[in-house]
Length: 74
Image (cartoon, rainbow, N blue to C red):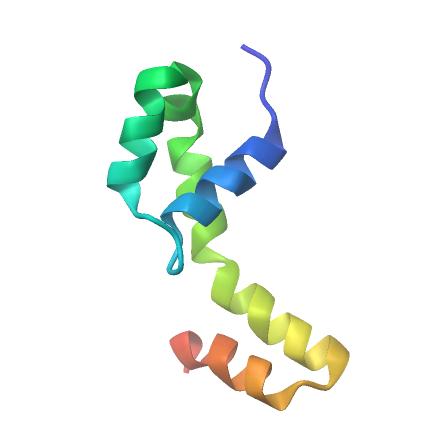
């Protein structure tokens, strides 16, 4: 099976803190069984969202984004 990292990132957005949760991913699996193979990668990507927000804050001088993102790590 060919892997599409961007689909894993999309799946991560579905299960991430502002997404629909893992139950939604299971529902999608009924129509697209390949999503099951992306679950581990999607969880990893979802786990990096806060760090990405902190990095965005540093790169763009956005102190609020940095504080929100780094809060999980301090």
